[in-house]
Structures are given as structure tokens and as C-alpha cells.
Length: 389
Ligand code: TGC
Ligand code: FAD
Image (cartoon, rainbow, N blue to C red; front, side, top):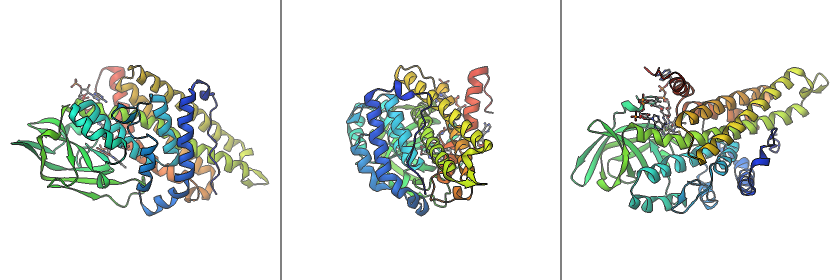
């Protein structure tokens, strides 16, 4: 059976956290222990998102938590990162839900919307009365969203949208979708509300990763969106890509939570599993794995913390965010694989968390820019030469 979470803090990062940051972390950690851990294996098995937890998550102020005003908590980026770390310690699906709602949908409306749009949607999104999704990816345009095919055409007091989005987190449960489409060849952002004629969604089933998360296709068939739902500052590919920075930074923290859960479980297992007459933790090869895991987690913790401080200071360039997303997700996936290995056959059952985190992190490696796309973003920043094409 899985054992209680013992979070590693080898470099005493807790010493640089404020009391408020530690308090927020504790409240989310307690929530995850009490409400998520007991149900998450069966949610994953049943391919079910635990929507019943959304009101509690909203009541804790975790939706759009680093946005100021409009009913949001206005947390600094360290506290916000700790929230995502703790949620992903429960499951990447919960962290994804909170990331999409806050870092993609609410941030897009907050940064690219009019004052009227902010007042209209942000407080209700913060209270969890509305759920949002973010539709950028299409069946034929994932890493290369600049090529997206969804079209928008002005027709009197409406825009008519036509196209399909795929792999959209929260899609089928969303009350509103931030949808990216091309108007006369230029990318623009729209808020499409549930119930708009011509708008429908379908659930993507059969995933072996992020099974406790809703992933959907969005279908727009001559969908008439009121002209006032166009986000006025959502113009051009740059606007769409700018939304991703918040989510990518949050993922750098979230991945740490998955890695810490796997490390904690593997360490406790290794201390109690007896083979050849002694705990497997007493074998050098197992110790080497644990030493590597702890080292990489510690480096990831320092990276995430520094990233959050730079973001608070407005100094985190998109490429700096890419480095942290790329490193921490790859690190977490390797930690999960090592942990799974240490648990032997038990590591492939859902009585333990390592296999679930390992499977989830395969998606996290792909979404919000694949590992290799972030490699190329860094390569371009280092050399000044783009190698995307
Ligand atoms: P490129 O010419 O490089 O860029 C166009 C303009 O945009 C600027 N830019 C950014 N600005 C702000 N933030 C960023 N992160 C930016 N990245 C680029 C860029 O400076 C340029 O500005 P300007 O002034 O010169 O016009 O565009 P490209 O077409 O060559 O593409 C570059 C590339 C490949 C890096 C980009 O397309 C990319 O990032 N692709 C990855 C796509 C991606 O990450 N999709 C994520 C979808 S959402 C999602 O996955 C949610 S998962 C949610 C969950 O469940 O948690
Ligand atoms: P592709 O772009 O086809 O890439 C396939 C492979 O080719 C990758 O290894 C990639 O690195 C590589 N590759 C591509 N281009 C290059 C290149 N130039 N050089 C070298 N290698 C390259 N999207 C949304 O808009 N909203 C969401 O809410 C959302 N949620 C998601 C949830 C899940 C569970 C998943 C799995 C995806 C989600 N996505 C979402 C989509 C996600 O952003 C895309 O999957 C991602 O951007 C990659 O696109 P793709 O899957 O089409 O892969």
C-alpha cells in the first residue's frame, strides 16, 4: 500500500518561504491528502475527472490564484507554484484543470480582454461557477499553431467560426472556450460560450495518460459568436503564444509535485521491501537511483523557485520559462520511471502512485510545447538561429 507523503527538502528551501507561502502549501497538501488521494486511483481507473472537487478548489481560492482583482487571490508566483506542486502531487489531471482555468483561460481574458469582458467572466471563473477551456491545438497543427485552419468571418454583429480543435483539456465540461481562429489570415481570439449554435464538443476516450482529466475535441460549424466576445487584444500568433508562458511556468512547479510523490513512495518502499535478507534500500544500485532522484528534484526545486521570483519581478523571458518546463518535466518523468523500477512488479499496479504519475507525465512532456520544441526555443535563443523548419 502507498505510504504517507514525505516531501524532500534537501537544500532547506522551506527556509526561504514566507509563512503565508507555507500556510497555503499546507492547506492544499491537506486537501490533497483528505480529498484527492483516497479517490484518485479509482478516478484514473474509471477515466473520470473528479468534478465534485471543483467547488472546494474554488472555495480555497485556487482558480486564477495569481491574478489580482476580479475575485482572485492575487498570490505571488512562489505561492501559486506551491499550489500547483501540491495539486500535481495528487494527480496531473487536477493540476491541469487548475492550470487551464487560471493560467490559460483567466489569464487570456485578464490580459487580452476588455474591462467589460473581465468583469463579466473572471469573478465567475474564480468562483468555479464557470469552467473554461483553451482551444489552440488542431488535428493537423500541434507544435506549429501558426498554421491553424479554424476560420473567423465577420457577419454583422457576429463572427462566424468554422473549424475543429483537438486535445482540449476541460473541453466537454467547459461553459466557455477561448478559441483561436484566423480572421483574414491573422490569428484572433474569441470566447465561445456553451450553447452557442454550431458549437459542440466530443470526449476523447481511450487515453492511458491523464485519465482523470477531461480531454475533448471542439467542433465549430458556422458557429455564430457575438462580436463582443472577440478578445480585443488577442491579435496575432504572438498573443496566442503569450498565454502559454503562465501555464508553462506552472507546469515546471506541478511536475515537481509528481516527482516528489514518486520519490517519497520509492524511498519508503525501498526501506521496507526485503530481498536477499535485507531492505532493498541497502543495495548500492538502489541507493544510486535514490541519490540521482533526490539530486534532480533538488535542482528542479531551486529552478522553479528562482523562476517564480523572476516572474514576480517581471524578468522571466519566455525562453527562461521554456528551460524550466523542459527540465522539470523531463526530470519528473525520469524520477517516475526510476521509482516505478524500485517498486518492481508493485510499481505497475494502481495501489501505488508511481505508475499513474509516470503515465501522466508522458502527456505533460508533450503538452504546452513538447520537450523538443522547448529544446529548439532554447537553441534559437542561444544561437540566434531558428531550427524549427
Ligand atoms: P515565432 O515566429 O517564433 O513567434 C511568433 C511571434 O510570437 C512571439 N513568441 C512569443 N511571445 C510570447 N510568449 C511566447 N512564449 C512566445 N513564443 C513566440 C515571437 O517572438 C514572435 O513575435 P514577433 O514580434 O516576432 O511577431 O512563431 P513560430 O510559428 O515559428 O512558432 C514558434 C514555436 C514553435 C516556438 C511556437 O509555435 C510554439 O511554442 N509551439 C508550441 C505550441 C504549444 O505549446 N501549444 C500549447 C497548446 S495549449 C496546451 O497544450 C494546454 S495543455 C494544458 C493542460 O492540460 O495543462
Ligand atoms: P506534433 O506537433 O505532431 O509533434 C509530434 C512530434 O514531432 C513531437 O515529438 C514533436 O516534438 C516533434 N516535432 C514537431 N515539430 C518539430 C520540429 N520542428 N522539430 C523537431 N521535432 C518536431 N492543446 C490546447 O490547445 N489546449 C489544451 O487544453 C490542450 N490540452 C492537452 C491535453 C493533453 C492530455 C494532451 C496530450 C495535449 C493537449 N493539448 C492541448 C495539445 C498539445 O499542446 C499538443 O499535443 C502539443 O502542442 C504537441 O502537438 P501534437 O500532439 O500535434 O504533436
